[in-house]
Image: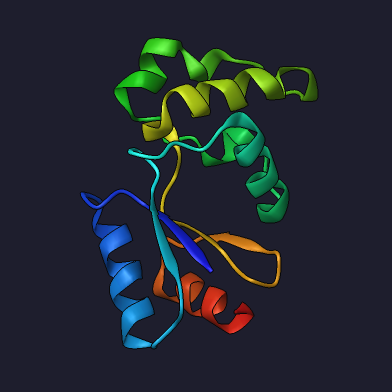
Length: 120
């Protein structure tokens, strides 16, 4: 399993601490230093069962600068959203865990982290 984190994020640190405590095997991706491409984001979103606008941190300065709250949330605009997330990875909700069973979770709670561990 892989966890996308921002080390400055308390939810990310908590998720990693829980993974450690549970003895889970995982790799860390510091997605601000190693940003995912639009294609990678699309694949993870498919695994999450979400759309790009579902994982946007709307209170970030970049979201406000881009005017994301006014962007249409349609299939026709999906690529635009993916590109914005790829170019501004700080906008991506965190942490995201991709489990070995092919699923993924936005793991902002201990329950979500435990669910990811259970999925392998």
